[in-house]
Image (tube, rainbow, N blue to C red; front, side, top):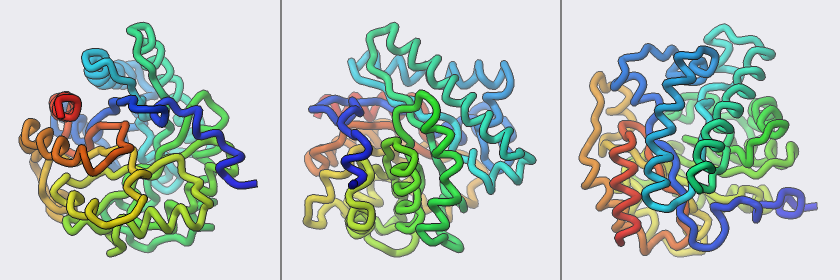
Length: 319
């Protein structure tokens, strides 16, 4: 049985017709640079364990629900669990049991956000966020696909046993890890989206062209991913990559761009936030509109907040 048969991807509302869905921006950079919070290991997931942390997350998501309401769009609630996998959680002193509990708590919080959105007539989707084993900017010592399947399997199994509608692997730097995530999601019976990051030349940090990476994941997983995204890169970094021929562009359904035009290496060394120009970022998204016929999910990544995403969605709608 193929993954397409075993997981009904058509149940995802962001894949139906010409719907537009909003998702959030740069959660961690907002918390660090706007709120002045200390996030060890750049991890936001511990916030779900305290009343103050949950209140802050509700306010954060509320800004994006408001954007969805104003633009009559849907909303993808991405759980704050980008770092909530085994390796990063161990650095923070989390046991396997506590990690499982915090991932479940993150979904419960996302469900509260969903309920509030639906009360305003907004179609909302809950996505369990999966992050890379290593640094989001560096493929480092990449795992094999089988190692990645085992490594990410526990978190994905947790999400599959909750009310999450899908899992989204964000800031994937290499194909093998992405394939492992897709296979783990297939085994758990939950839809999965893969979001690659690219360098300033439009290639993955491994040097592989974006189109080849998407084609390879599809080839080695029997088109197991529900869709693909690009995140943690500026539109000027990946815009040229969209010129490569093929149907692979129709597999790109989401964008979560950085505010800054800086490279990953430059951002890694930055001590101040580069928030860029929200209006310019929005204009650069609108320029991509004709190249991405299947795009349905718009949000942001490092340096962005609700101002950027509001401008992006407005420009996209207007274009």
